[in-house]
Amino acid sequence: MSDTPVPARFYPAGGDAHGHPARLTWRGHTLTVMTEGAPALQISADALQAEARGFNHSQWALSWAEGDARHLLIVDDSVAALLRAVMPALFRGSERHKQRNNRRFHLGLALLVALPLLLLGAALRALDPLTDQIVAHVPASVEQHIGEAVLARTRLEGPMVESGPAYDALQTIGRRLTRPGETLQFHLAERPDINAFAAPGGVVVVHTALMRQARSAEEVAGVLAHEIAHVELRHSLQQIVRSAGLQVIAAALFGDYTALGRWAAQLGALKFSRDAEREADQRALERLAEARIDPRGLLAFFRTLARKDGGETHLPTLLSTHPASAERVAWLEQAMAASPSSPTLEPIDIDWTPVAGQGVR
Image 1 (tube, rainbow, N blue to C red):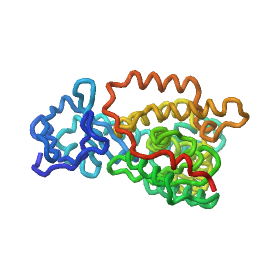
Image 2 (cartoon, helix red, strand yellow):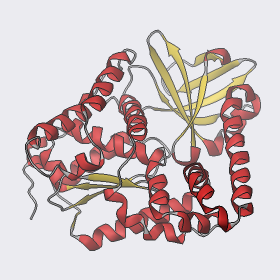
Image 3 (cartoon, rainbow, N blue to C red):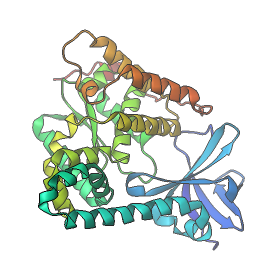
Image 4 (tube, helix red, strand yellow):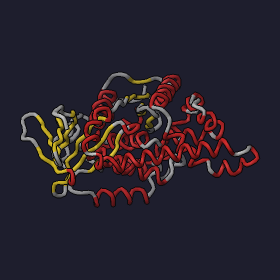
């Protein structure tokens, strides 16, 4: 490898929530991690694991174990080419996965074009896997367009809050959860129903009623981490495409994604499958751990809502779209108990009293 270092962000096990700027070099069979004011670390390639992260796999996570904990490096894909060139075996598994997806997409496209309209029933049976392949190839620019459409529609439906204790708290929590290289926007909508959702492109909308109902910043962080996970895993985009139906899929096959934007208004009412909820919960726990935020806030918030509204006819919007079933709660408890030793948690430094007291005008 050349002497040109690769920039990264280093999250040591038990370190602070924001990480440290780092420079990476590679020689022989060893990765060197250099951070300011600390001795260089030497890690053998055999100890490293690589995983694509972020929207559209825009980042790589390199990690290695130290006892029961793990160290983490986040590297932008735009600068990771030097690392892939000198240690291809480390990245080979993820690269093969991308190539397999591309081959499956082209095969699905060819089959759909070849099928006559009289075999519509067969096409409908193949709708879900075909939708997944369409979603996998939606450009990031289209996701951003959909996110902008969702935000514009939200602004038309009612007032937005752009200052005050609740808004400031939301931005602070959002910054803790945002990974290096990600672009996430956190918006506060003045609404009486308890809800939050994240649109493709990283637009996150939280209702004021949710901020008032939460008892701590950690509870809000748990909800946000879960919503961000749905977007990172492209669940929101999958649901939009599936809800829109065959006509939108047919248009997307030929590169016309404009119809997706028209369906974006339904985003706040989309319901996710049990598997999608569990996958988002798992990814949310990982994000909370990276940010050194207590993951029990996610459980605490849903339990509060379930107790509060257990005897009422209508559940909060958040529970109707993300049901806090006993099975889901039990799974979260089991996942937390099975996790390796948690890094040192860092409380979110927010006085929650004025946030909970900020009512809806």
